[in-house]
Image (tube, rainbow, N blue to C red):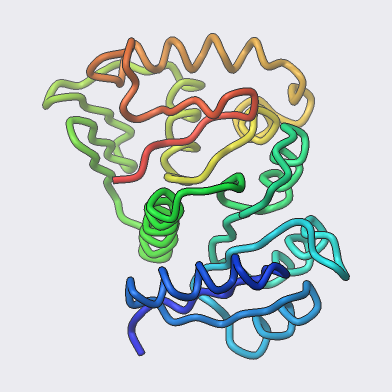
Length: 228
């Protein structure tokens, strides 16, 4: 029973069948729901390690399902939806989803994003004093950031931005979320601040700023710190 339990909330039987087969082959345990209300009930009875959620459900809109689940559930939520409007993605991510995959989708990509979300959630449950990914290392207690063994200087805001990204590693963070977390609630519309600081941060922490490995741009939505 050590394998992660995945809750699929999806009203299309062919999609549920595809997910059930592919995820079972990958040794995940599966619970399924064809409506929002059924999914919320299943989650309350047997809390999942990760939720795959369609937004276009027949009874409750997926955005409302996210809101209700996030009242008590901390497990990752990955949206799997045919809705590809930027605002839909932003609303879902701001509402508490961890990632967004648009239909039609690649099973391999979905599983990769699931693994990243599960690793991050497990790591967040056992907070460490240091973080390391490839050439990048951060000591939270001393606030020292190193790249390839050499310390690099970050301004306080650059450090706060980096730590916010790392804290939510693998999760897509919207522009609004990052601006609120780093600059405060009165700066949520000032996307130019974020673009400038991300560019500066990349020049300092990326081995090759022209080809970012750590800080990934999610076009028109926000940024994601790459999973290990």
